[in-house]
Image (cartoon, rainbow, N blue to C red; front, side, top):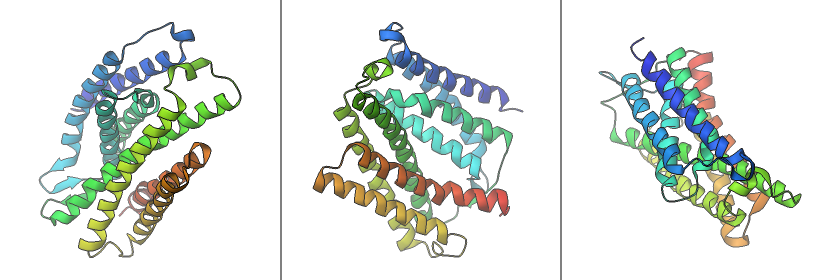
Length: 269
């Protein structure tokens, strides 16, 4: 109950930020002007309150509680943090139409269904490095997924010679594609480091309950490797790039949240 008011406040602010992005995108001919600093400012306040909730829910004397909904909340916080930091310099705030409400849903799940999965604070540093880089990679690839969906809609409208509506509010298609591959490249580097720290330093990464997670993560890494090679060698773009991005994202999310869903909620481990 102590976290109820801060939770509702953070949820409300995230939803308000998302609503402002939607208004900015879908207003006719840009009739309603909501300045980026206002959207970013509201999201920053939501982030601060969300930080308090994460501290209360994740950190305890035994270690880190990374139960499935705590982990989901942490990933959503990282996503919004990266979005806000990047939006200061680049026109990426449109992703908030999906990512801000996603953070609100994550907080709602966290307070509604508490779950426990304790990572001991006395564990090896390699484990903490593996977790940190993995979370950062998942967060960036979630941003890439939303960017790919918006890019698909933009590409479809332009192919059908329908450049009106919210398409007018988006940056040019080429800029959107360039931004997508920037996000994917950084996410790929973080995922690579996360996998290396796991494979090289953690003895149980191929244990029975982690095998599917490890294999799916490696498959996702391979998918993004092919995508980046295709972009570099053959100039892949448009729908081919979008399909590979979504395929890699789905595989990666199944690797982490799919395995946690089965282990913690279905098998209660």
